[in-house]
Image (cartoon, rainbow, N blue to C red; front, side, top):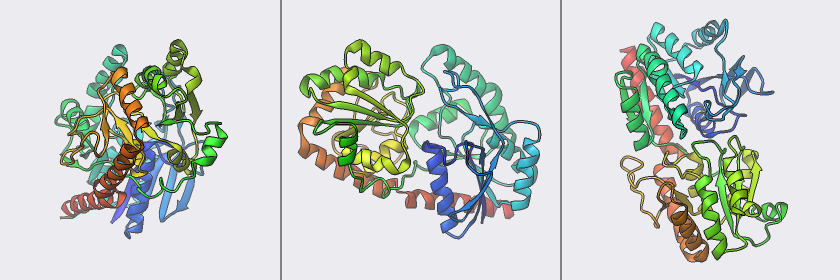
Length: 396
């Protein structure tokens, strides 16, 4: 097959959808398929790049200012004079059998969807992020954008949508009813190998952590993962483990949690490291005793699964049926905590730090779960099966 992969976010830009789209694209190429990647220009990344069997075309883009409305991300959009012409030229030269899009509210998704409708090329769209915001006024704006912009665009070309968890299924069926041709239930995939084998000692030395218990929190700090509940749990953690430290690894786009830490008098125990290279993430995981960041009920994302793959005990605020057909058992293959309950979270974190044997059992079970159900090889096969069936139907 000739597969076009489309995502405004793509390496060297970091992020969950960026890494997943890159891993899938490389997997498609390794399986013998021809792959074109269309993405937005980012910093000093080359306009055209060939690597790992991929041809990557980065289109001129402008970055919108960071704000709460943009979920505090610096989002790059390519929508400008000539954008469709550039997209069409790249796709017509490549002649894809199928297009795999990432992100329903990106302009490259809309432009490639329009081209696909005109040329009768099937499209598969992975919806990574729900247009939601904990601030009520912004949440209303997002609902309006979904209803007035995103849904009509999707309805124009009706892609098949990848459903990664139950929250996403509920979101899709309520916001985009009638705007898609079908649903495919495929969980997020992770590379279970790259996160292992890190060296935690030099991370502890670099940040002067010595033998302190480390609660790691991976990923960018944004309103949907604001870490406020986690910071509010720290007084209980410090009562039981006075030398514990919360280490936040990711760019801080939304700093309410740091203000809250100062208000609670726990600022000394919170280290906001900022963004680090992908190569350093395994080292931070190796240094950690516990990892937690998915705490607002928005699902269990890539970084949590990668922590589980690295055998780091992981605490998340999701339902037991978060993934259709996959059973989560709190305390056995993950640790579940209520949404918005810092007291319960603090007690859970304290219990985990108290019990090294439990952490070891839990980490082993988490690793086995990820290998069995979320490995990139498993998820890659599922995507290829869907894309092959769509391309076959289109040709027929």
